[in-house]
Image (cartoon, rainbow, N blue to C red; front, side, top):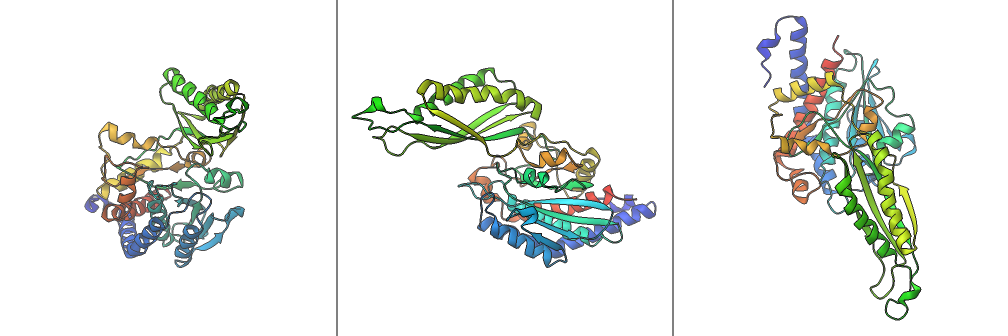
Length: 390
């Protein structure tokens, strides 16, 4: 814990100690409600742009604590915006609540929402005396849909003085270093025919995908370090005795920066074009969202977070191979290009179970998850108070 005796040198130190005690008490007082919200989200996972229950439950929780809540924010049915206070310092807390297909909350977005709601409630107590406006953004479709980018394009976030969230992970890792990423929907259109009687009359859309994936596999040998290319075929045909007429898939390309991604993307596109050329199919490649950016961290806020998290018993000394868990991409990166931001990872102590695994989904409720909620909410709230201290 923080050694309060070392903080008693003057009035500002005494004020800091008092504020810390108030935040800790506030989060503790609301811990049961925050855990209940997290567990409800976990038990009812909803995919991106379909988070109707999650948005409603989050809005209800914030409204019950005095926040003015706008539902269907900026025209997006599952986005919300909640505000407390009317100060000159604007703090934005991100609540992600979409789940993964087939894996539920295996990325722990239920915990993210509870942390941000808890931090916002704790900070709302200081709104008048610290000249703060506390805002919670319910942001849909982080898992590939680029919800924050869509909100950003409509004018959200741009006037914030600090944007924050904390993401669950196997271990604590303060600084986010996500890849830039593009998300594409791939479709090949061929021609169906009886695979036994008239195969020569068909144009095989499944073969087009096979050629493209072979080309991608060979290209990986020549890709620069710090890049990732991965995806899956979501539709491979309709029947084994019919030449597949239409196939579809989803593909992600990751690089260190948006500039690196811009240089890499045409090489990936040519692999899919090769599938069309070799088979005679028509290729349609459609972006699922605008590309996610790399992250620009506000170092002063990050150091404050690290200090307060350590004071709560968090440990940032995990082995290097475990600390690499912070490389996942996020649309919070795009927000960080516009306003000061941090995106620390808060550990559940479950390594080697990691994000996007069923094992990790199981850890996103229970004792470790509940501790992450209270620690994350407390650390983010204290970070904001110190960041805007006179």
